[in-house]
Image (cartoon, rainbow, N blue to C red; front, side, top):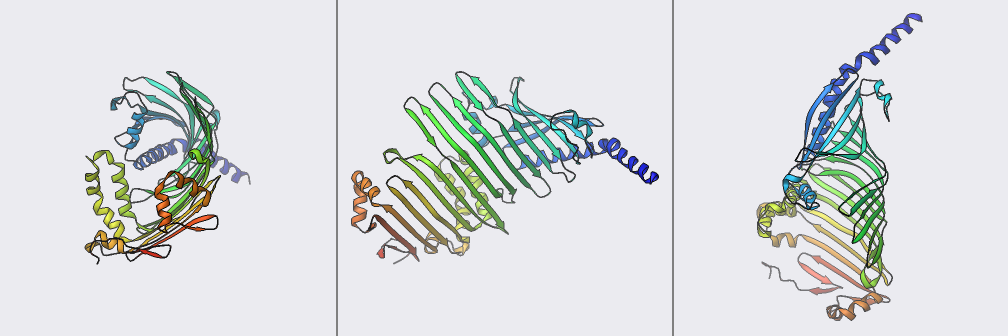
Length: 438
């Protein structure tokens, strides 16, 4: 028993005292792989290592994150007073890594852990401007590198504020957890932000309690699939003319890729959205998508992201035409299963279902795509809401007179169907001129 006990102590000593130097190399490599892989998720971001000072039990390193040309950079520049592209700062991430299968040196700092892995790290953030000056950012990132190379990062942000030129930003507690796994290309995330507020001379805007979670996997087509959920308790806008409160907002979505076909669904609910003189509306939206061509969808998405690269709308449509034709020729289903707008006068209900049958891409015409479409539209409007609308819009009166809307008790209804080039509304055929058809 004594020999076995001594052998066990020797093994433990090797694990605790010798493994850090070996595992430090693995942890450094793993962190760089995670950062490099995370950067490839967006073509607009560059991550470079500024050096790594490796010790036996702990190491220190720095990474530089820069935003290249693209929508993200344009959006950030739009928030500045000076549109000069040279003014966009770089994000600097300074990291201390306590390595070893049992990272004992991490116990000397906040959120240290003896959890087995390749390392335990703490990172701070700063912005570096063109003139070399730096501004420290609030918050700390605590990370764990698992034995399999997965990186779990936890951003912890305490309440604070920042003021400049008469404008103030306030934020509450934030706790965000992100897990990256290069082995299976999955990013998992969840977090809570207690509050955000922006105060200026003209108005105040605030958001209460943001919660989000999800798991995303990058596909070979350049977009991600998986699930995502976002909840916002309320949003407030106050100005000299009054104040509005909107919310809560809830978004739930999921998408899957089966071979080269994309399917998914999304549900959005938003309460208390101002609708002018009609009052406030509660909105529910349910969308489903099935069997859409992934390659065409990815190409179209990238083209839309590069809209600023085109001289005009015609050039953009010309660049997208081939992928749009392939998308339509491959067929898909797109359904707005529910679009309800609940107002004090009643609920406006809309349902739209579209199924596009596959056609021969080599013989594609816009007419053939139209003939392959099978769609139905159902609309229900409360009579009180219709009365208000007809008082201000004469065209709605004409629609009622032509039979597009039929009264059924306290509601007006419309059922429209389009199949094989024939449109019927409430059972009555409506001629549609289609080129190539007699």
